Length: 259
Image 1 (cartoon, one colour):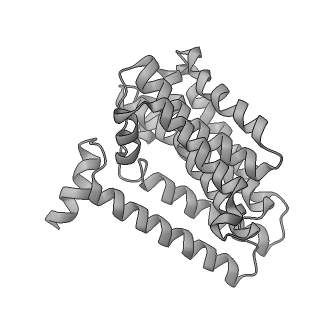
Image 2 (tube, one colour):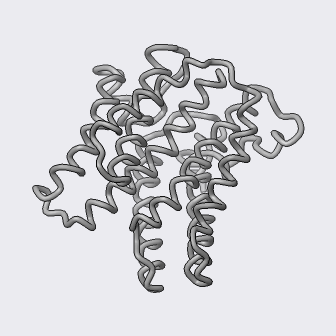
């Protein structure tokens, strides 16, 4: 129990950066969780990461980022009214919030297929996202926070010819751009992830942003050299999109709110 508290619960309670132990374990758990979701859908003859699923999962990834930003807002002192629901806890910060949102998505998407309700998951996802976004609106303080959105959108438009490509380039671009803009342009923010911190501190966080885009480019254009099938490529692009959107939205909203 001391080990679990020292490397997992304690760092979350103390708002510390990630360490090599919890980073490794979270990555392994993420892969296992992702694979279990794949097996669950496969066992029910539900296509995994087709365009229908990709369009449906994006708002849940974004909502995870918005909720995480609302938690940051409560940490800055805004805890009145409905915002009291977003006080810092193990379940509304990373990685808990993304496991929660993934579970909600899987449940709704299963119901959509079970009862053949077209776009049920996607529509409900955007409704939840819009509700949470309205909680952000009164706290917009920095319009320059849209810069990371522009830095993500431009390469996504230029390099994409399909929704898979666009979501992946935009998501990973937003993650990298928001980190660069927060740490090196605005200042006062710190990167807590180990790999990103190593890259940013030893080169520049702009290099981190470029590497994010390069990673998607390799999956997108060079997947055959990696002995990947077209279906593998779509799954990886979808995963890159989901991970990037969640983190990127949280970072960008922190900048916009100034928290």
